[in-house]
Image (cartoon, rainbow, N blue to C red; front, side):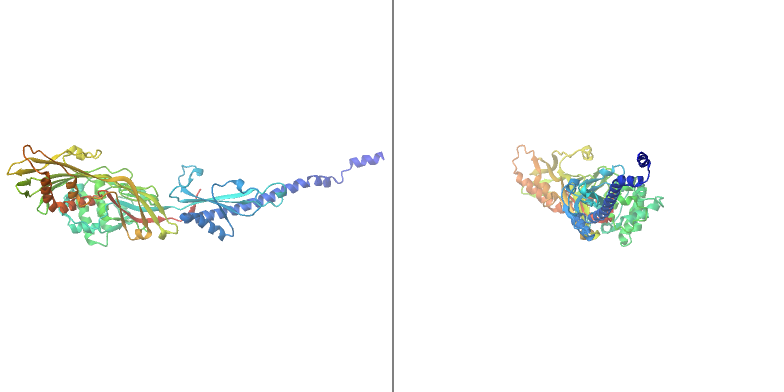
Length: 574
C-alpha cells in the first residue's frame, strides 16, 4: 500500500494533459484576442481606404463636399450617417448597430514642410481648399463581446484641391482717342527717348493680347537661360527694350502691333535700367515648372499694359510729358507726371492662390492749362485764364479672395476683392517739391487763375478746388468660367466724376476776388468761367483720362480681368 502510494507520487504519466488543461483557457483567450484584433485592424484598413476616397471626392467638389462624400460612400456599399460637430470616440463606442458615422470638415491646407503635419489643416474659413473626412463605426468582436463593449473603429482621410487664377488690375481700355503727342511724350518720357507712334499704333497695342508663358519661353534664351525653371527667369533682370522685342516676336496676329513693338524695342534699347521679370509677372505654383513645359496653360495679358507696366518699373519716375500741347486751338497744356515706387513683391500681372495681390502704381499728374480766349459779359472781361490742375491717384489693389472648380475647370468661379484707393482732383497752388512728394496728400492754396477787367481795369481772380474720389473699401467682383473665356473686364467703382472733370471743378471752386471799391456780382464771374471752360471741357477730360489709362489707373475706379484658371485634381495630403 505504501509502495503503491509512492509510485503514484513519482509517476509522470499524464503531466502534459494536465498542463494542457490548465493553460488551454489562456491560449484560447490569446487566440480570441488575436482574431478580434486582426478583425478590427482589417475593418480599420477598409475604413481608411473609404475615408481616403471620400476625401478626394469631397475636395474635388469643395462647394458641396458633404454631398460628394455621401455619394462616394454609398457607391461603396455603405449607408452613412452624416454627423455634425467634432468627432468623439465615445459617440460610437458601445453601440450595438453597424452604422458608419461620417464627419466632414472643410478648411485650408498649407503644403509647407516647415509646418507640423498636425497643423497643416485648419478647419473653417471662407475659401476652403481641403476636406478632412472621418469615418467611425462599432468594431465587430467575435470572442471578446462577452467581456467588453464594442470599440470604436475610426479612420481619417484628408485631400486638397489646388486652384489658382491669373488676374490683373488697372485700366483696360478698348481704344485711345486723344492727342498723339501727349501719349508719345508720356511713354517716351518713361523710356527716356523720343517716340513718334501714331494713335493707330496705340490702339493696335491695346487690342492685342499675348500668352504670358509663351512670352516667357521666348524670353528665356534672350537672357541666357536654356534650361531651368520659370522662377529662375522671374529673378533675372531684363531691359525694357528686350521685353518689347520679345513681345514683338510673340505677336503673330496683328502686324501693326508687331511693328509698334519693334519700334519701342529699338527706341528703349538706350535705357540702361533693368527690372526683375518677377516685378512684372508672378506665376504662383507655375514658377516651379521647367521653362517650356507650361505651354498648355492659356494665360494671357494685354500688350499695351505690359509695355507701360515695364516702362513704369524700368523707366523714369519724374516726367515732363510736354509743353504747349494744343487743345483744339482753344488752349495749351503743360503736363508733368510723378510716379511712386512700385510696391515690393506685388507684380502687375499674377497667377496665384487665394490671398495673392496685384497693385497699380501711385500716380500724380500736373496739368497747367492756359486758355487762348477771353470771355466778355457786358462791360466785364475775363481773360488771362490759367488753370493749375493736379490729379492724385493712390495705388489700387486687387486681392484674389476665392477660386474654385467645384465640378472641374468649366465650373470655375473666381472672386476678386478690389480697393480703388484714395484719389483726388485739385485746382490751386502746389509747390514743385510737394507735387513730387507722393508720400504726402496734396494741399493746395488759392492761386491766381484769371483777371477781371471792368472798363479796362480790375482785380485778379484767385481760386482753389478739391474733389475727393475713391476710398479704401474693398468690393468683390465675381467672374464665371464664361467671363474668363470671354476676357470680360469688370470695373469696381467707388465714386465717379459727374459731368466731366472741368465742370466738376467749376462746381467746387472757391473763388476769391479782391474787389476793393469795385462792386461786382460774383455770379457773373462764374458765368464767364463757364463760358470759357465749356468749349475745352471734353478735350481736357479726354487728354487726362487717356494719360491715366496709359499709366493703368483710373479716378475712383479700377478695371479687373481674370485671364485664366488652373484647376488641379484633388489629391491626398499629410
